[in-house]
Image 1 (cartoon, rainbow, N blue to C red):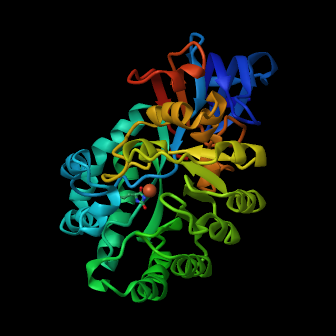
Image 2: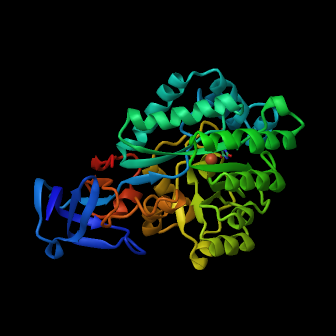
Amino acid sequence: MDCNRIWKGARLATFAQAGHAIVEHGLIAERGGRILYAGAAQDAPLLDAQEIVDCDGRWITPGLIDCHTHLVHAGNRAREFELRLEGASYEDIARAGGGILSTMQATRIASEDELVSQALPRLDALIAEGVTTVEIKSGYGLTFDTEIRMLRAAARLSNERRVKVATTFLGAHALPPEFAGNADAYIAQICDHWLPQIADLRLADSVDAFCEGIGFSREQTRNVLEAAKRHGLAVKLHAEQLSNLGGAELAADFGALSADHLEFLDDAGVAAMKRSGTVATLLPGAFYFTRETRKPPVAALRAAGVPIAIATDCNPGTSPLTSLLLAMNMGATLFRLTVEECLAGVTRNAARALGRLDEIGTLETGKRCDLAIWNIESPAELVYRMGINPLHVRVWSDQ
Ligand code: DI6
Ligand code: FE
């Protein structure tokens, strides 16, 4: 069988089934950017390759997937961080016009080029640790033009670097000052005018909203999700981060790909997510950085068999984190996720949270040949260390 490249002498964590699905003497063959074979070397078909790479016993995992980021934004909130160290809460700062709105001001005056150039160092940090797909949300422009500019900047990042970008429209992230006191009118504007155009322009793969006391109500969120569905877009939701508004249940009713954060998720929410197959995306960086004490109900999610993903939530306010390896470490240390859960959370289940499990997230025949090759003795090392980058090389398929 002809193929372009073979990686031999590798140990594979394929994530093809539950658990790591480890192959000790593994081989991967690639043709046209797709995986032709991934499995035990002794079971491989007879292969005629243009290039053979000897992995010297290194581990190969699927390329990592960061399935929840706000990577595109302007400026930073280091000053707000200092205020919080002096005792102000995230909600105090948000109510005083800081928080998301201060990043909104910086983002509105940034050009598309500036948004791209400010996002690149963050993207490069993710890529350096083996990330091959990244989800990026809008939500700091909060006017039609600036939301579109953010989505265009996000899409452009995939031309600047060898990485796949999934875009998410998060117009319902915060109430812009133009609509102060009139959140319903803002939601109507999003649903009736912005979302249809964004769908037409194919600028977003999915739609998200911040269902929260300091964000949007359950009813307002419902309108956004309904509009998204009407226009054929997938939905996700920031739910149960600071309180329980029943967001996860609502998201599940709409067949959401994921509900994210979930510190305040209750049993009804877990059951609803199980029914709809919605992924629970946990964001330990935001939990850590805001010094939240309420943990997501990991044991209940696990018992119900709800798939768990882990992401950085990279954003300037609550999670200025650009390391998916550290996010996994936090997931294990803070939330008591197992090593296998952490690794599945940035591969298989992260792919599912983006609706792309048919294309990425496992090492299986037919999928894109996105690989991360590691200088490690065991997969647990990827979760265990803090501050060493064991990536040997990343392979990204542009097919
Ligand atoms: N939840 C978060 O943690 C971020 N957005 C959201 O809906 C925070 C965004 C920010 O503070 O800039
Ligand atoms: Fe977020």
